[in-house]
Image (cartoon, rainbow, N blue to C red; front, side, top):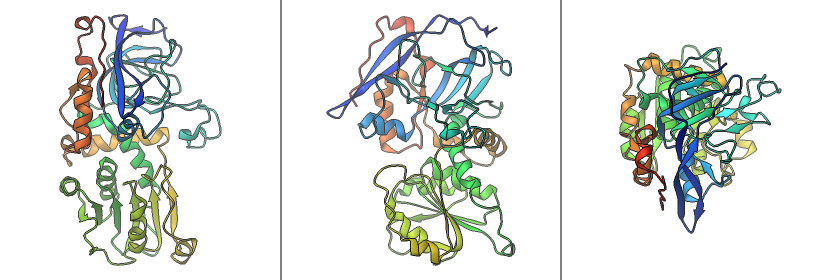
Length: 378
C-alpha cells in the first residue's frame, strides 16, 4: 500500500509543444497527480531541476522529441507518495534518467541504458495517462524500473541535481580507463579531458580522485578553464596553436566537447597502448578524422560511453558526498529561477556563465495561476 503526505491532488508542468521557425512553445499546464501508485513507484515533488545541454538542443529545434512533452531530466525530488518499501515520504532522492525492464540481457549485464524497453524522463510524450514524466514540473511520477538513491545531508540540492546525468555518465567514462597498467606503476599517470563543460569538470575531479598526477583540460572558453582549474585541472586554451603536451605522453584522453576536430590533437597526445574514451560526439556530424592505421599502430583502445548503468549513479552520489568539502561544486549551478521564468533561464544558459542553470518548480503558487498559461518564445 502506498504511503503519502498531505499533498494537493493537482500539480503543474511546463509543457513543450515543439519548435517552429526558431520559436519554442512552452505552456504552463495544470496536471492531475496520480491517485494511486503501482508497486515500486514513487511520486516526488521536484525541489530543484537543472537545464541540461540536451534540453537546449531540443528547444532550439536541433533535437527532435515526441510532443507534447515535459522536458528536464536532472533534478532532486522529495518523496511525497511511495509504493516502494525501500523509501519513505520526506526523503530527498535522485533517480536514474531511464526507466528500464530490469530483466533483459542488457539490464542484467550492466548495460541497462540499452534496455529495449527503456523510457527516458524528460524525453517521453505527455499523455493523459502519463503526464508527470519530466522535471520541468511540480512533481514527477517515478516508475518501478527506475533506480533511486537517497541524498546525503551534506549535499545541497544544487550540488546534486545534475548528478543523475552528467556526473553518473562521467563515472561510467572514467571507469573505462584501467586503474593502472602492469609494468608502468612507477610512471605518474597523465590524462587529457577535451572540454571544460560540466562533463569535463566532473571528469577532471574523478581522474584526480583515481590518482592521476596531471589532468590537462582543453577548451576554447577561458572562463570555463579558470573554473576547471579549481577542480585540479591543468588548463589548455584550445586553438592557441602551441599545445604544451608532448606527443605520445598521455595515458588517457576523454572527449566531452562534442567536436570531432579535437580527435587529431587527442590522438597526437595519446601514448602507445593508451585509452581514448568518446562521450560528447553523440550526434551525426561525428565521422572520426583518424584512420584504422592510426589506431592499430598506436595499439590504442577507443571506447564509446553513452549514459550509464544504475550503479554509476550510486557511485556519483557517494563521490559528491566524499568530495563536497574538497571542490567548489556550488560555483557550477546558478541561483534558481521560477518555472514561469524559464525563458530567462534558457537565455542565461546560453551565456555559459554557469555550467547549469537551476529551476525551482515548487516555488510557483499554482493557486495564483488559475489558467496557468505561459508561452515562452525562445
